[in-house]
Length: 239
Image (cartoon, rainbow, N blue to C red; front, side):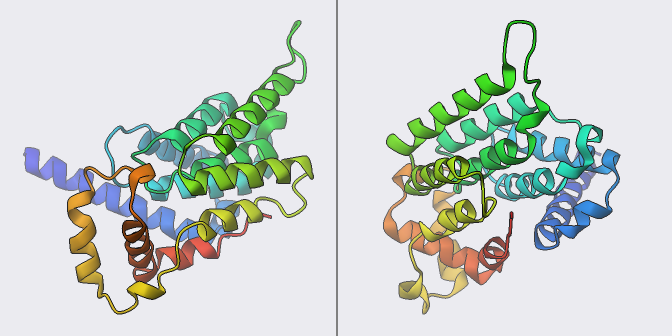
């Protein structure tokens, strides 16, 4: 009985991952969803990101960026705790167990560019929107200056510049920075996928992104390129 339950849970997880990957590839799917479905998928993504265990969090993180960017036009029909999501996004940026923590910066950008106006401009004597914006800028400047992974540091700087300019190109410059700060894989073109997976496999439970060697970063990107995930990420447009 226990094995059957675990198998059903695994199948549900695989089905959700496939759906989220399809949505990343085809963001127009968000426009075809009703608000209840959007809210359910937002909560599913956040639940995955709140897991302490490594593995399986990169896809929900990217999918959440897509969901929240394209769900903006639904207004109050989309249930969203902006401060809660921003707190999680900044946590991801600093979490060494995320292989691509720079997408936490993209999530910060999505929330700032598309959802910050959900916060009240004035509440009693406070100014929640202004205070949250100021805190976000401070935290981004901190990321831009401290010893986080190079993609996080560079993406934070680009996001600050885009914010100052009023997001004329949306978050496309931030997404491109997240991709471009990973090393090129020309030196790994003759290494087959099986060898790459075998090399990275033993590291999966211990890998700390800020301590990844240049070779590990090259091989990780090569693995993503071989299975199509890097191409999927490179086609993302948040304008």
